[in-house]
Length: 589
Image (cartoon, rainbow, N blue to C red; front, side, top):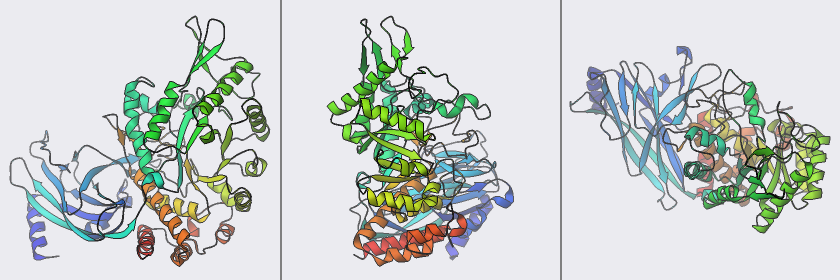
């Protein structure tokens, strides 16, 4: 410690005792039983060195706490606590890059621990004594940034009321490599995060499909595009997932029903007509942000019915299509021929718009092979131009439906159990797409509130290593009742239902887990780039992480699933080093 730093610290201790240090972006503050808290070691870190690609961003965290209550301010706005005697700490960053700061809010997990989660837009928060808080510090590094090392300072200004602020300093450096990541719209990682726009309307308190609803949707769609999302999600009937059984859950209340964006009317002569304007408006919004490679349609095959009554017993699927009759009464279609007419019309609409080749009639975890086969055959009979896709958690479906389905998304454990079957299908059908997915399981690797940041990176290393085309997850905004207060739902691990949160202003609130997704996707991109170049560095990276550079060998030693014990080191330092090696290899060419 320099003499100047010592003078600062002595001066600050006269005001109040403050502990402050720097952590890498992978750090996730944990709070609960004192023995489980993880902040103490961070306070020894008064400087930090960072690496970054161009076309990306650099990020780290400031962790601090004080022995008395204080007001934390990461902006430049004035703020006075109702407790006029309360001191404040104002955080500012000085450097060549343009940094933005966000206080990190905490989220509760199923074990009642609190973890770093939401990146708050509000710049001020009052903190209790002896309670650690972390601050996300991020700067964009545009593609045109000169490569080299950039230095900077973090200043903590401490004061009370109208007194002159006192300051302490922490330092950082950023090495910007010459490698430039592509724009997210050009990412090769095929990202499919399912969208649930009705839940966004509920939390924003806007009428469903109204102009205000679409205004609110804009920031959510933009956040998906920033990840490189490829797929537009459409619900073509009411309640395609039966609300995730929310009507049966009373411990963690939630309304998770999704509704169709297609309006159906019955004319006086009993004929049906369809209004696709809302659906098209949503498609256009997604395409505006570059989400344009696929339109996945739910609610036509493998419809989840829960405990709801079956409206049309003579139809092979419990499809619920709401129709406004000519007499002004809403009824549901109960005749098989009317449901068929609806599906045929939908195919015709997509064909007329030139979108049909991008449409996928999607099934979520079909369980009954015979029933699913019957549904596929029926739709092929009445609307033969539709193409099919399925998220599969039963490995035998992959063999059974290789010819019928164009896009497969097997569950990660299915891939490990039946990797030879997956490889055979990928070799036999090189034009088909194969995505890896996780959901409320497995516990590892996953993207829950309690999951380390690096587990998300690991998921994308695994996805690339196993030669999958990309990643799928069912959640983005499937929020329980008060997700900012309690993110738990049913027995699902906290965070399983979403990656982002609703802000009080109606816009999207990003989380550390969203940032982890972004990093993992970037690493997938770098891996694929090195594969194209035939780099030997990738062999070394795979061997270091998986113990081999041959996927079949790795899967063979795994048994039926991917387990922590399969990896020698998956801590923060190891993944920071892997990322650095990727950057160095790509920058040397």
